[in-house]
Amino acid sequence: MAKPDSAPEQLRITAAPADLARVYPWLDEVAGQDLPPKLLEAMHIVLEEAVMNVAMHAVLPEDAPEILVRFTAAGGVAELLIEDAGQEFDPVTAPEKPRPRSLAEAEPGGMGLKLLRRYCTDMEYERTGGRNRLTLRFATR
Amino acid sequence: MPIVIEDIEGGITKVVLSGRIDIAGAAQIDMPMSIVGGTKRHVVVDLSEVEFIASLGLRSIVLSGKAVLNKKGKIVLLAPRPAVEEVITTSGVDELFKIYRDEFAAIAAVAPDPA
Image (spheres, chains in turn red, blue):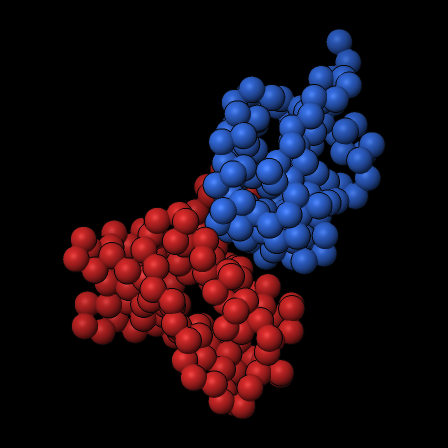
């Protein structure tokens, strides 16, 4: 059970591998007490995909190299916000690549979008002030 | 280390992954998995001890698998736990690799053809 209302908790990281790996212990710390383990695992899967998308594809500007991650929970919904100043990318409307029919045809990219869509309840993307804002919502009850 | 590579009888390589194959775990398995991909042709990837995997870990397995296949080799997955298998199925990786529950069957599936 999530707390009825909790203050936003946020993490600022760069795209350095050691920094990116901080997302899981951070999420455990801010959300682990309140959420069932299965939901927390779904959030780990989705959060990995979201921050790795930014790290690998967004080309973060030198003067704004940070990825901001924020967690909130209220009214039966847990929410992760991922924000960055990199190139515009909307995973909500990005087309999924067709499923490869064989390993020979497979490309490693594109699997992550399927995971994003499956493991969160709802996603919302907006581009404001030169920043990507991706909101991922999870029903907690 | 979340990866152990064993050469077992009959020219088979068993890759045992374990624990959390998350961002840090994927970084640890990437190079060994590349070497497996570059050098081995009969590979069973044992996932039974994997507690967590997401897109980075799957990427490492897919890249290694493609390299094995490019050498006309064979590679299969063995015994993922239900939560891990769900990630594999959701991502479509189950269409790229056969998944076996039984180790003997997995080994038989990748074994070199009798001369």
